[in-house]
Length: 116
Length: 114
Image 1 (tube, each protein chain N blue to C red):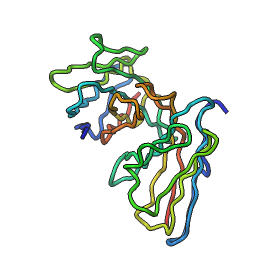
Image 2 (image 1 turned 135 degrees about the vertical axis):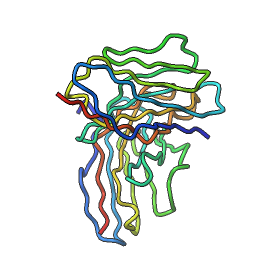
Image 3 (image 1 turned 180 degrees about the vertical axis):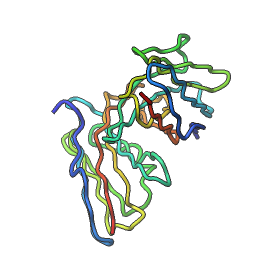
Image 4 (image 1 turned 30 degrees about the vertical axis):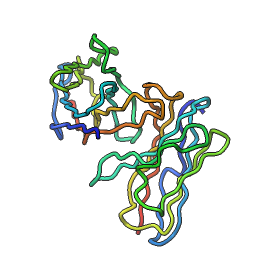
């Protein structure tokens, strides 16, 4: 079974500063994917970034980067230069790389509030 | 539309009634997923469709829950004899077939059972 742990239920960050959201995972699979999603108050889950277990380089997407430490089973999200629009819930998730689907196991989420 | 569309956006129903939730995925996406988001349980996987078949129904919480997908497109999640613990946001997502590609989510249906 897969398990995702996000230990920070909520955090404040000053506008224009960087913030790191923690995510640790547990799995016995050799091949897996790690995702981060953002959920603003509107409720929609917005894909941010993806890291495959065999990817040697950390993924980056604009202001988002994923600090992947496979030996420690961590996949922290770094948001640089925070903006007010970054205020939202952030979910770390993982999937098994298999032919029959790509269902996600989610962590409990971290609520981020960006202060002006 | 360009994104995943779910309807209704909100549904209030009386305990014991049946409800149907609809999901219209992104055109061309063969994989479709239903998730449930509740305060107590977080985000939980319910069911996965590949085309019209559901190879993974492992997340359906009871036999009161069922889902179907027709024409490889629209999916309906049905909850029979609703209970208060069914109150949650039901999220639908779609993606390209298999692989490890990102899933695109709809805005969800907020179900309240009174």
